Length: 382
Image (cartoon, rainbow, N blue to C red; front, side):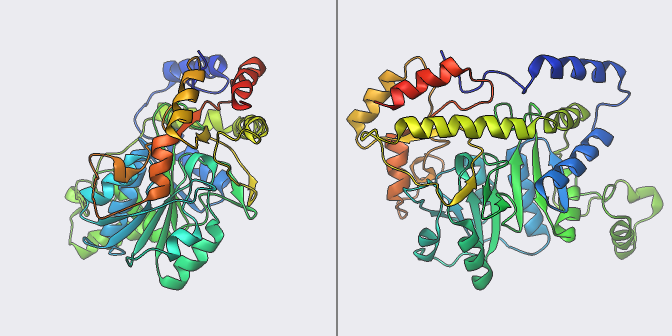
């Protein structure tokens, strides 16, 4: 069996040895300097001013939406457009926090929201929460321009697209803020973990508070002093004053240590994923059983997993059987409109529905052998 994920980390044995040494010698394993150092390094790698490390990519999404509400940038009842082909924890925070989620269909050419999908949207939205699915995007530069013109807050879920580049810019840098996942099997693994990136200092400080109970311990000192004075808080109570609705999303030093270690290999990881993607694309390009996709607008694709959308149900079932010795899954969470927790009959997203019914994805991880890749390519050729 060829599995979607082969190892917990890249360069696993060496990483585990260093992790064991760190645990044996560390005096503190709750969130501290390793987590903060990983934040600094990741922000520098991504090219953003601020990064806030949390305990999962799903928490990153929830923390981001809660922070925007706390800041008054959005309010309950606001309509939020979201990529309908996504993972449920992009949508669930919108529902949980009283917003009105509006699914946006995707392009059959790249499986992502494209500018045509957005222009054709009937409802007026306050926020657009894009998912850069599987390492791809639509023409997100055009989407950014459109959102700026319309006053729409653009957010990116970049959990599956770390390292991908379009128009000379990394995905995750087009929006007001972006989220990342470091769950096992993602581009960079900290076992569990997530990040929110932004260039906005006000959002950054709010995220730091939302991550840890709504207190001000880790925010900018001037901001902390101003809040203390505004609410007339004494020194005795200051560390235990909770200013905003918040959570406990703190990561551990173990996660921070692993993030720092795995960042050392990130360019090698991206290269391997890109090389595998190119081999799969070359193998499948002449197979008439599959819908054709076009990613020529992208500069570099650090692919999360390789998607296949079949033309009919019979063809889909044929390839499910052909890939019986390869771990395949539905394309991410499929169409959220088709999921029981969300189902709202007034919305129709036909492209996402076809992907939901006739699509699956194949393993792309940096530990695949040449023999495993060739076995997958042989089937893709038809």
